[in-house]
Image (cartoon, rainbow, N blue to C red; front, side, top):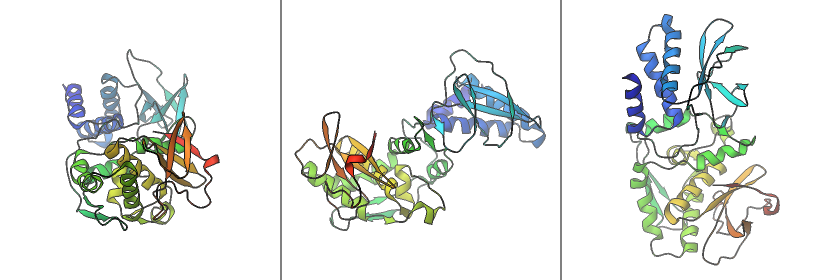
Length: 322
């Protein structure tokens, strides 16, 4: 019954795999809430994950404490792991242990925990105060933003995923995360209204200037003391954002409102985007799979579509395909 209830909650809340892992941890700690029962909570969390089809292992450290080890389909930045059979197993509790004995038994049909988020999660709604966002160049490009603060807490604790041995690929995960229904119903209508009846180029220019000028810029080091990228909705919530946050948000807006393909474009110490317009457009471009993508830089203030930031070289830029 407990497994069935957890799976039902997962489906009702549309939880991603990491969200389900946190749910299993919370359920286990409620059932075994006495510190003397900590190992029981670990075993129950492992049981719930295992019986729900996930690839997990139990580990015991030198002090005889038990830990849940999760196999991930993606790597996690800055987290130690055990490598067994070519699979990376991370400690679900983020503990720092010098050595582990791992039970290596496998189970039929088990699957790795995925860190990509395929659909919006339906966490209990606690809307943030409404924030009015306004483009400097286009008076009509004005809209309100209100996000779920419970989702902000969830993302603030989300591990930083990457793949292909490239930490730059973490931006792939953030940019491909869909926005919630509440954001679609509050933030998008104002933008949809301002681009209605416009050509592709006009619409992209308006949305580009909106992202360039509606948000205040500060680097992560100044605000957070370390590098931290935002999921699209986080940029709508926090007061300050930097280049990768704006590129991620802009790529989401363009795909959702205009249905156009977008690349992330990485220069040394800077992230921008390139958009595949179906209309002819002048300006700086990249070619990917025989298709032209025009540069759009959401941090190059008041720069129009096709303008590359000074000092950035498109010939040596790296692209991240979304």
